[in-house]
Image (cartoon, rainbow, N blue to C red; front, side, top):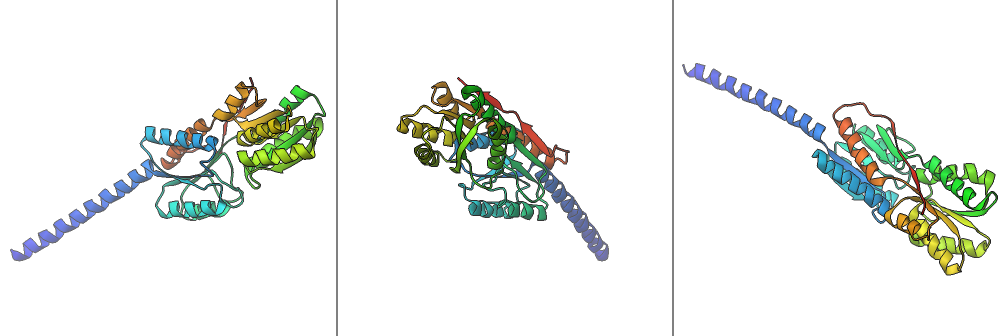
Length: 301
């Protein structure tokens, strides 16, 4: 009898262990499907990316998903460290808005090795595998900016270009689109990087206007640099037709005030929302498009 009780106890213990293992397995699947998203954003010192962050947070809250957000502060090295921490912290999926498209490649490849899906947002990665890239058509936006200047000032008008962060895909693509038209129909006197920054935009534009007093228009690859260029033109006592890019709140206000000629408006909150919706589908094992475009629109007074 004693032996029988011992056998029953062992059998009961095995049943409990099997049941426990089954419970943990189901819980793991639930965590994978619900997921914790890691978001590495290039900088929160720019209203455009603050809007992207809001779109991500709002949609994640709506879907009941957790988000860990880190700010790279426009520093590729900090972004790499931030992403390493996110990967070690057990995120289910990574959304990356790169500071630099080449530098981010190592981080994307690290996520690939851990089988953590990666979505790129606004800017792409040069290497590594991503499940989706969500962005506006930056090449088309650059073309739209050049066409606006031609329409406003006529062919062969003298222009300058304020470029974004060297190495960022948005910088390359917006420049590519702009020059497709500008090199044929405008006279590009000078171009220089101002790192998507308002203060640098002011300083670089001031130097441009001093060296090239006959500049008639400036294409700034984002609204922050455009707002800096507005101050530079004002200080120089010049009337310059300035076109920005992004459609931030400050940019659109400057358009309505007549200080900014136009902005090629993206929809950052929508981009953030689409990124989370896409992440949710990926974590559920659903198929998503490799490239997901977000519409642009021209904002004029």
